[in-house]
Length: 317
Image 1 (cartoon, rainbow, N blue to C red):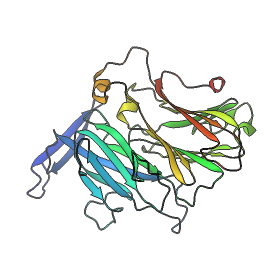
Image 2: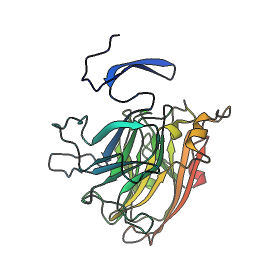
Image 3: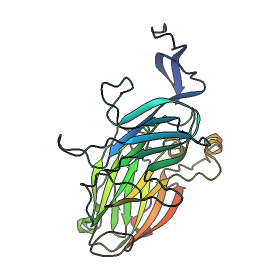
Image 4: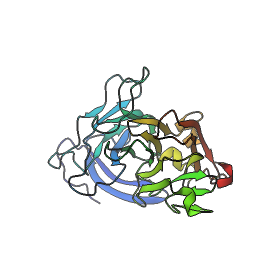
């Protein structure tokens, strides 16, 4: 291959990359040293797909800050328009990031946001401690919910991740069955999951989102977990930055990202134990009491945040 023409600032020629034993041609010229970082994409997903041109669409602010820095490395004040030189896809923010650990935040006050606290005073949706290097994905998805899509009787549970793997499965297990994107009501009785339903299920394209609605009236103990059904890479959850949010009608109540025992770098360097697939991420347990609406007074959440070698079953709820 010969290097393509480019402006004078593009001093480096990226020829190809090797991943998963395969060589992928890139053949592009870039201004930054490819050995020090890579192009990283932040994709904002909506919990429900817009059905028409009149459906609400976010225009979120996106802030990318390297760990230890006071000032953001990049800050986008709104969604990029098609006439912007950096535009790639709607609600995608793409830039060169040096390898390292980042906080990536999104904010749109006209959509449901996190309630500010003393520790986190700004109502942003952050992905904290995102470790990015040559072995991880180079993208992350963040899910936002319109105030028009969620009523006071429901909660949304959403899953997003990187562009790879192409599909992860958000699952809710209850005593009578499992609700997942593959078997959206697999249980002893179809009525057992009538108040636990899939509303969005993007498969085979990466990022997600996968979104489940849990509606009152309901009284149940639930387990929330994520499955990598391919079981090809026991480190896939470390590499793909999965995020699960629990959303009330007035706030993003809980956000979960993978807890890594020592450090992401050490975990990526470690050789997986033989026979350990780590294909299941047990995110949290929920206990919901019947009430007139969903809120903190009737929903109890216990964080689990563990990687397991097998899928959770209904008898474990």
